[in-house]
Image (tube, rainbow, N blue to C red):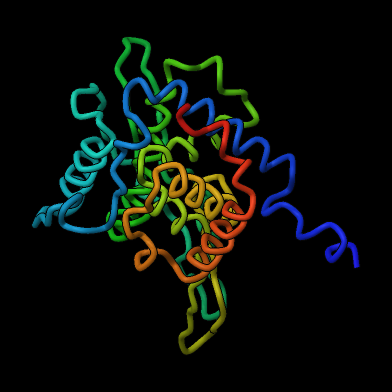
Length: 254
């Protein structure tokens, strides 16, 4: 009855939606001088953005890192890439017993005392290129925001960093990495496992992708590359924004 009287509610929790739109405004204001949102490339998992390479291991990660830096307009930014210590966990140690996987970040960003900037990544990501791109883009987004430290509150800085990834045109990778299920089974067990990457929820990522598309005027054809559940949420978010054009009015150029 209430929905019939007042219409469908916000796509996100109202407070979360307000934060999203406010943060987009801040990113446009602060990062727009460096890269206009209208000029931001929509990065896809194609050869145009990620030329093939025969490299393996860390050399392959370095190649992907260079590609991500390039599309983010950070080619000349001094930063080193380091592999983290190999993770342990998940090994079967008895017929029905396995060790728990180590809970460690997929990537980190830090500035050394001497000013050297370092991004690290988990070596296991080399075999999951989409997740590797999402991780490296997130850590480089920390670098993008480093000179705007006053904008980033402790409780929201990782969320803002994810939105900066969307602003930089790599939202496809962040959204796909946000949450994923996989089925497993062998002679001893079967079931489902999950993993997450990044800090925005899948629904928040869908909203971010929709805002990005509507502010730019196009989405660069990302639909076929999105995981089905994210693609469906994004379509819902696009319809929601189209029904409420006032939400983005303040973010558009005057």
